[in-house]
Each structure stands twice: as C-alpha cells, then as structure tokens.
Length: 220
Figure 1: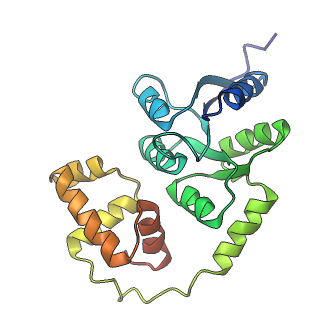
Figure 2 (figure 1 turned 180 degrees about the horizontal axis):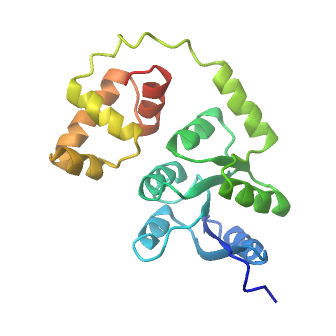
C-alpha cells in the first residue's frame, strides 16, 4: 500500500504504440512517487486535456506520431505549460530530430529501447531540472555544438524589419502565433504573413530553426 504522505509527480505519456503506451503507464504507476493519469496516442489529445486538467510535471513524448508530430506537440505544450518538463522517448536518433526536439522545448531525449529503470530515473531527473539523455544522444548533442558555425556579427540581421524582429523575439519567448497576434493587436493572418517573411529571410522552414538561428547569431 502506498503511503498517502508521498506527493506523487504527475506524468503524462504520448505514445501511439498501444502496447508500449500501456506498459509505460503501468511502469509509472508502479512507482510510489509517480502517477500517470493520462496516456494517449496523439499530441492533439494531450493538448486537449490541458483544457480540462492541470498540466503534468513531466511528459514522455514520442516523435513519430499520427497527426501532429511530437516535435510540434512539444513546442505547443511547452508554450502552454512552460513548467512541464518534456522528455522525448523515440527510435529517432538523427541529429536534426534531436536538435529540433531540444529547440522545441524538450529537456531530455531517450532512445527506444531504454530500460524501465532508465525511464523512471529520467522522469525524476527531469522533474528536478536535469536533462536526461542516453549516452549516444549526449554525444550527438556535443558533436552538434562543436560543429556550430562562428557567431555572425549582430549587425547582419538579414534585413528584418522592426516588426519582424519583434515577432521573432516573441517566438524566442515561446509565444504561439495566436498569443503574438493578441499581444500586438493584429490578426492571426498578419502574424502568419510576417512569419513567412522571417523564415524566407533567415533561410529556415520551421519555428524551431528560426529560434535557434536567432539565439545562435544573436539577432535580437
């Protein structure tokens, strides 16, 4: 019997493989200090749950999901619940996937299959502010940082207008497009048009790449 004095961390699981999803939920529930009230197969379901339930302390996120990808889901969830720590659990170990997941807000990255003990430890580490990663992934991250190009002078700002720089700053701050529109008192479509211009000028195609470039090259 679990002690009622133990304050349990709330953990959500987003995993489209029903067997693995069930196993992860059972693994978490078996721990005295962990609880898994939500295990779903799509990011859309987890985001919808935020409208009804308190956000989790930690979320285990797959990347290859039906509908919204785990990377896009991580970005949206991190924007709506900055305190939630997202740990990616996936088969994808490519540099681009790792980079995009971290830029989207993931604090940890584990490869399948990871042992049950490693997954439980990663959840606890993430809740304490650490960045749990497999040794292979940690090596990939270090390699990516080592390959980063020298920082460009801030004066070379790609010709961004003041409004585009303002919107880019809001992206870096984690605001969604709708939140940016509300903050600037403009329409969603106006923000979308500015974002298209920003992406074209920065030679990127995703929000995570735009944010990474802005930070790396000190454009703001």
